[in-house]
Length: 236
Image 1 (cartoon, rainbow, N blue to C red):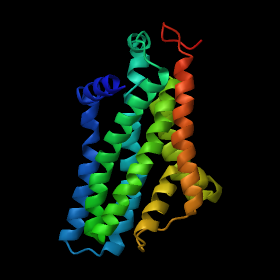
Image 2 (cartoon, helix red, strand yellow; image 1 turned 90 degrees about the vertical axis):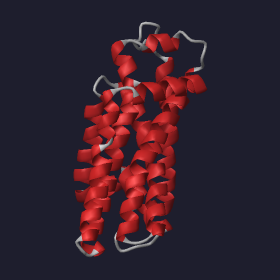
Image 3 (cartoon, rainbow, N blue to C red; image 1 turned 30 degrees about the vertical axis):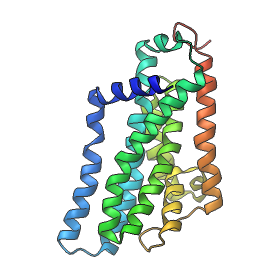
Image 4 (cartoon, one colour; image 1 turned 45 degrees about the vertical axis):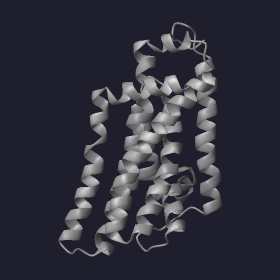
């Protein structure tokens, strides 16, 4: 499994796709620094920057780029065959890919969120945002990794989940928030470091259970799905 993880990390950081991970975190830190340096009250910029940009855009989009990239490109170009010919359990392949994807997504999103949290309130809020982002990264990447095995257009369906389900419906239909990873992240961060900048709209028990369902369910389904691939890279 360690070999697959190493190859996945090397392939991920060796592609131009990794450059797509930089602009959004830099934008988040830059906006927070600009607001702080101009003495703008955190009550005015904290929620739009941290929640509106950081948790609603930076975290899920980074997870989408990484989660669909660690396996999706191999399915598209047929190189998945080389992995499937190895005497490795499908479980180990998925877990290695997920470990790399979740780790990269968590670090890339958690660092700018930590900086924004410190500037907006305190180190405690920064750590709360970083910890919640790590949990969210695992749930998001499990979902997007699964999408890369279910469809030829995982990025399109991933964007639909982020923009339509979480972004549009999440603000209009309260019932959809129970299936929103973004809401779980907000709830976790708000519980760790209560602040007026964050307002969790999903209970902690629901957030814990649903995060586990997204992470574990997505992983198990992905393992099962990969097991149905034939040596030609097509599903049987």
